[in-house]
Image (cartoon, rainbow, N blue to C red; front, side):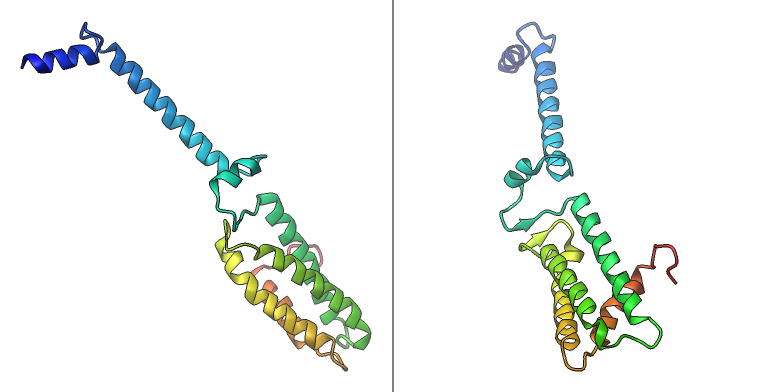
Length: 172
């Protein structure tokens, strides 16, 4: 029993008041809070890219909120332009080929950017991007034929608008 009192006396500073235990608890709490701030900061979209290089593996593609919103907004504009060409009176004709091919090439570039790396913080987009790129490649091949075939282009425009209702004025 005497050894327990000696150990407790040493741990509490000898007077039994528990001051060093309280200081230790405060230090542990401070370290925990600091660790949480650092971990959550690594996921934030602020200027913490340098922290992310230490917290994520090199093949992980971190998409910032701004980067994702910008890319998706560009997707929406491109799909809207495709939809406009495909839904014009009389349907698209051979004269629309260059415009369609240009839009499809832009979509392909954007989708390729989204699928970069082995993993991403947006797994659904990252997993679906390769299929989307394949569909865009099919649409490009078909649009470049003589005469152009825009059926795959219609599938791409339809695949977006089926889930995402048009959000611009004048859209149907």
